[in-house]
Length: 248
Figure 1: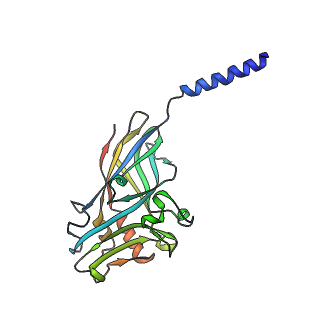
Figure 2: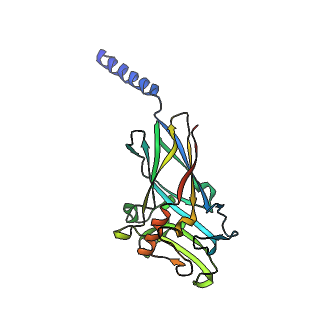
Figure 3: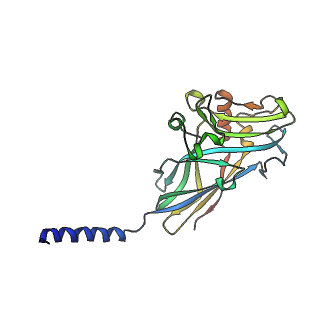
């Protein structure tokens, strides 16, 4: 082997060895979602609740999209994670825990979109959490339902006393995609040997409370984009609060 080839080979070997010695710069963290109605745990189908207008109702379906997650560093700069989409579904316990990968560091807040951004809404057929078979896509409207609640109430004027709130719309003044940002009570530290977890408690009653009070006697069905759906999205923007942080 000529001397120059030998030097080149040794250089490549050294670079490979050096790469192996680079410490891991990322770690996992977890987002957990617990669903309640007021102070009561949400149970599908069997428990009767009261909305802020004191109207009784039951719940048979509750799900929503979480996407575009970002972290807020201690200096308040944003770290946007690779875009991903997650469908949180009360009927599927495994969907209520989302594991994400982030650069090592200390963070003071978490943000995400509640819904599906306009880019994905116009990107045609999707897979995984965005698969239309999951019942969150309006084929007639070429757009996603950002959040869905179904149930029944004795005051509902809809057939069979049903409640059907399918909230969507991604353009114009009635864009139902909402930006959520919540500061954590303690900072979370992401690292290769740590896996902090943040628990969000989600109150379904926020859908029907301030600033746009909803009475089931007059509004029992929303099934298209527009002002009514947007008002619900403005309400449920406030349904999240952080109730626990496990920083291990």
